[in-house]
Length: 203
Length: 179
Image (tube, rainbow over all chains, first blue to last red; front, side, top):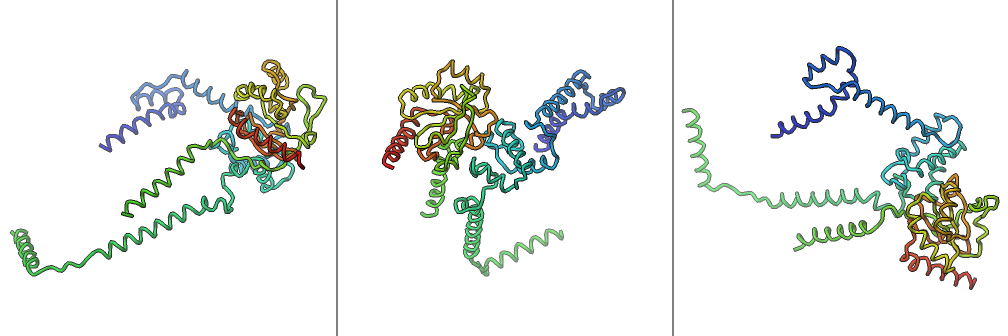
């Protein structure tokens, strides 16, 4: 049953990925060979070119967004910005980092960080600047302070408590086991059964 | 007996925590600016860009700073209420036009009415960052000493106006008068 289900699943995924492989393989006679090998109709060139055009359009639109300042992007600054903004939360789409988010606010904050990096501020100073305005919530790594002790150490406390409980439980179970010596009647029965079994084997 | 009681207690605690968590709006991030001095600013006025307005001018008075924009749908929702509250004269409302085109903002005020004593334009969103704005509308209540005493994220509702803002304004006016 499981193997059958796995087969169906792999068939589905292969089907999904097939057009991608074809995009790479498109061109002349190879298409024919591929068609024969896979035994199914390949998407036509029109479809493939539409896919390609769309994907270039996405790349192009991503490149259209440029920083507000007109200075050419400085790779060192951009690298620091990328690293820093991975650690910061976008307050509009709260499960995205500032680096990932396309919200307007995230863009403004990235610009702000960029200017501050250019002005020679350290990472700590920039983070302090942002937490003063948006609170600790903007940090993906909350600072360790009495208010966050439960958050930081709670899981370890739970783990230790769980281990202690488990240990106690196992120990109690072990203590509960009593030795039950065999009576003479039991022994006789065992002998009888064993000898009958060995006789069958030899027979 | 305790054998059954312990899981029940744990379950109860869990339910309480989850119930509290469900009742809270994750988009309402507590502002670190509460009870801190309002960031100072000096910006051009929306209706007359040649004039400027700065937060220092409001020293000694209780005032509301309402962050709004013509592109903001909830602001449109909030607007009639602000007009009504401005009419009562309980507290002067100043507008911060956030990331907006002045012509759009002016058209918006003309169409829907203007509850603000005046609005300033925050074109490059510098002030928005200083005030920790992450979604319009936001409203700050600032006291005589220039300290932010209350922040409403999202539109002001009649409930918040009567339960949070008005009592605080009255309290601040009483304190400010005796000082």
